[in-house]
Length: 415
Image (cartoon, rainbow, N blue to C red; front, side, top):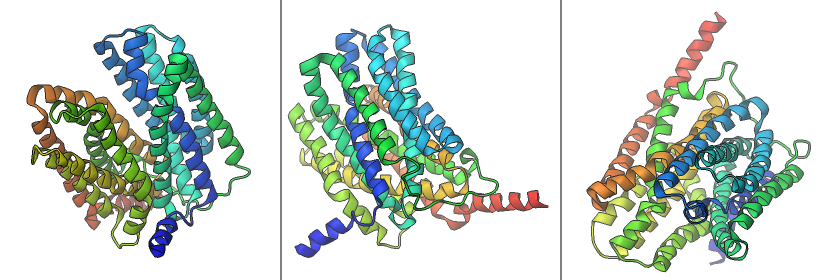
């Protein structure tokens, strides 16, 4: 038993203090974005918008998130990850405070778009910072620690936000959300100031860096991320409806299933990642395994009407998530050695934002026309297609295609 506990805590050893600082700041920031889970309620209850208008505002949310990923990546390459992260934290705090005063529909669409553009520019920057503040052998676990902070923040944030709304109303929520982001930026400035922070590992950038969108294998990889993310977001939009309408679960029972996901991630993701790192499998191998597990989580839902399949499905999805996300990110960071890291990580971040634009509305409309079972089959097929593409990427000749092209171009330019 002692040996098991020792191995568990070993998974957290060897990470730099800068990574722990980043995780702490991320925890504060994610817990602080309490407005997001209550946005649709705020729009319908306080501002009395209709569902169609809310749909357009949420689309602006997704488009802003996508723009933030791209712009954040470009700015990270131009001015550095540190400036982008600090600016994103501070300015998004101001936006959260100010957005409560915008109540006209089209102005609110623009405001939400700008807010998410600024807030989500943080994501590619933190990925680039991770590669600088962690040794190559610890990079995947460093990423997993950041993911843990994000999950914990999203777990505590809504609970705290609900209490704030009861006591202070939505106005109080916007203020506290804004001040939390600004506070995170001040802590970031104090703990990770460039003069204080020590860069542990810095990648060498090629003389002629490859643009991310011209790296064909990487673009295909990002496409698989979009496929995975479209399926994954169903667990936070359509799956709860499925639990309620088909299996007649109460809100409390649905909450327990969601809590199961967060609890397993919080307790076991880091040891699981460490175990997979100890194997000789590549990042794409691990990503492939994660995709298949998430696909199985959808397929099992149509295998039986027994309520127990919901628990099995959530378990399979959670294990798949814990494997697919860290190792897909590790592959993206490894691949970014070919060019400018910000662009690569920006494209990676955009895959999740794109899924929010199409994943929710598309699946809800599909369910309305064809039902849940066919929707789960489609999600399984999308994930299987992503797995096939990953298998193709695993082929060494294809994997090294863009590297060979890049080397050939360099030789021609030198001549």
